[in-house]
Amino acid sequence: MTFLLNPLQRLVPTSSTCYVVEFQGRTCIIDEQLRPGDGDTVLLDMSGMYEWGNFYKNPHRVITDEGLILEEDLLEEVAIVGVVTHEVLVIRGQESSPI
Image 1 (cartoon, one colour):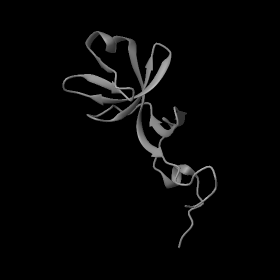
Image 2 (spheres, rainbow, N blue to C red):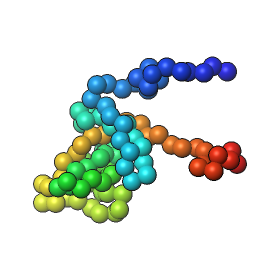
Image 3 (cartoon, helix red, strand yellow):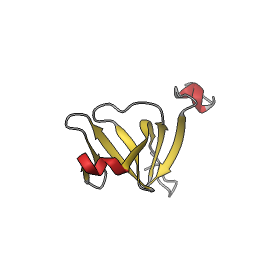
Image 4 (cartoon, helix red, strand yellow):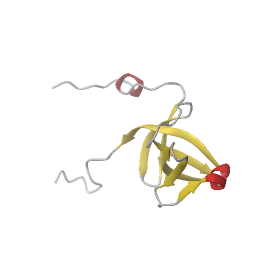
């Protein structure tokens, strides 16, 4: 068994444009300069309100985690903060019980 006790950048390839974001119970690494591809998870800024969503190219739309479909005029008020490159998942509960 090998323990990897290195900085995050050595374990997970990231760049200076990547940030760790914790929002609505999800912890993700986002890249603010990566262009979203079809189906990519993105962090959205909707006039100061943030939301996770999935980006789609054809037809051009974003579907939020809440199920809201943003297309055409609604997309004018939306900015993509960054594209999710990695998601951090907790595999052990708060009770500190391994089962």
